[in-house]
Image 1 (cartoon, rainbow, N blue to C red):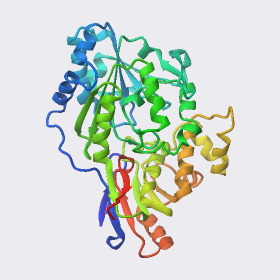
Image 2 (tube, rainbow, N blue to C red; image 1 turned 30 degrees about the vertical axis):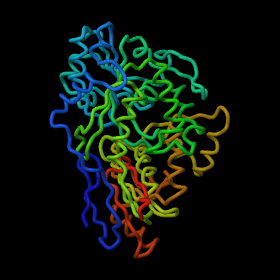
Image 3 (cartoon, rainbow, N blue to C red; image 1 turned 180 degrees about the vertical axis):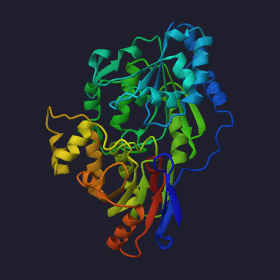
Image 4 (cartoon, helix red, strand yellow; image 1 turned 135 degrees about the vertical axis):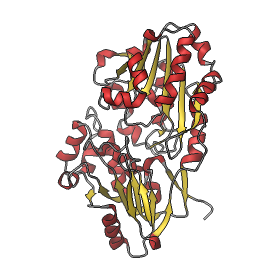
Amino acid sequence: MKIKLDYGHHGLEVQVPDANLEAILGLKPIAPHPDPERAVSDALKQPTGCPPLAALARTRKSACVVISDITRPVPNREILPPLLALLEVSGIPREKITILVATGTHRPNTPEELESMVGPAVLANYRIVNHVATDRETHRYLGDTPRGVPMWVDTRFLDAELKISVALIEPHFMAGYSGGRKSICPGICAMETVQVWHGPRFIGHELSDAGSVSGNPVHEDSLYIARAAGLDMICDVTLDEERRITGVYAGEVEAAWLKGVRAASNIATAYLRRPVDIVVTTTAGYPLDLTFYQAVKGMVGALPAVKPGGTVIVAARCAEGLGSKHFADILLENDDLDAFVAQTYQPGFFIPDQWEVHELAKARKKAEILMYTEGISSEVLSRCFVTPIPSVEEGIRQALAKHGDQARIAVIPKGPYIIPAISRAH
């Protein structure tokens, strides 16, 4: 059977043997909003757990709107116009509105990327700035969380009288789900915050996983920091397979987000009768598959579907290569992945992006990882603890040779946007 995988901008068609195909896991179909901007406007007028945006804005003189960076396909072109218009109508002048890009520890977004994210009109008429995690002078210390995470938050956000975030709710391989509180931590926090919050005792916790919220320390401390920073309102969305808005969840950071999480869980959870020998997956295409760093999410997201000792085949374009220099150096300068992970538990040891190496080690501990990409040479990729393959079909051939002609294959075209689960009914 020919199956189209999300890969780069245009997708990738691959041939999967019918006799071995167990299941294709995808999002549950749900009708998109026929008028997305109207849906956003309505949600802001009737939010969950807090007053309407107009009422919040009426007594404020300035606002900061936090948006996700280029690695998240948030439909800002549909969300921002009604939100910004409502702020201005409610008395906050345009020159007092700052749009702050929550880069987390990623690189700043280019002007061309900003235009693609928000549209030319918003780019031309509003102040848009990138958060820079390594510039601690642009952050203010708010104390520590109960678990000991130092809270350094971007001062441009803290100094605004009205604080709003816009994001997408989807499965996240550490925090359970994206969106909500994650716009603040790690989105606009300094590296000093992220290195502890993304440290081994957080991401190594058994509940720090996709779809996991209750008891997840990554989620709980992120929420604590968002509240300490004074986040007044979120405006998050869920999307369908065509990245069209299916739900808008505006309101108080926890109440509105949990409402969106329930919807996202229903859409994203896909059931298998049993774990399979081979999983073919992706990193959900552009913009999420820009780097190998992001591709790790596809590897980890597939783990619930694969048997221990099975094979995960991931296709990711990786147009920008491995990712940050820190991440690339860790991969290329270490021969033993587990030894490096053990080092990170030593007091005082820290290298930015080490948390993604933890996740890569987690994936490799359960399964063999084969990878198809056009963005990284096979020589470099072979030093990144995965096996390069010249095509997905060749990866399937190698995996069938290993697991046998009767091996079962599951395909996840949208990669980490899906939460695989084993059905208890079988």
